[in-house]
Image (tube, rainbow, N blue to C red; front, side):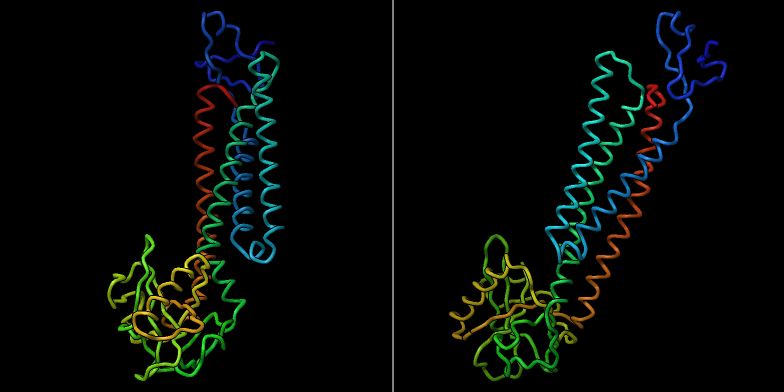
Length: 315
């Protein structure tokens, strides 16, 4: 019994069906309509999304911080699995080019491989951004101690080297007149955190910021510098920037004839404990936003691919 594939009669050929002989007798081949195969569509929608969620979660949260080797092993094992799918898709396509019997599934398989590879890449990159911006600093602060009622004129930096969040005593302020900047492409700005008006034996507490001073005069205007409610600091954790802030402090020591034995660097903040919690909330919000957005974005891509495949006759 011969299958019908004419466009005018509304008949369809199922996945892997036989094309109409009448179409061949016309001198050119008319791509037959086929029933949609929902299985590869669902797989190409959900599997890349699941991979994205897994890779993003591993790259952004606690396992990467506590067990980075294990985390990377899992993430790159998933990449190896994706590459295996790519090898399978390429092998199917080569059989198609050689004229051997091959079903139409390699077209979906190639799309599936590309979707998985993109999901892995975006999951790893966006998870890494979230980790470096929000979750990594939050975990760092969680490993350190919080101090309250700290008097900069009574404590030395060596006594609170493990400080992550510091709430200074009321009346603590920034001594803008002793601020300094060190320029290395960006300008690394520092200003001592002081209490009272008497000179300190050692200036070990410093508020810092980037590109918020001129570098050649005492004009520190970084975050919260003129906010009367700011009286705390969040420890600056970036090891790369710390060296430049240390050089700025050394310039301040020479210029103002002061001493900084064990300088600690902070972002001047209002309610720094709440700011730390905000990092965690921002990290979780970014994760949720990407998870939901990627689910619908992948669905849209699959629908577009379905329309294209239906026109070229590749299901």
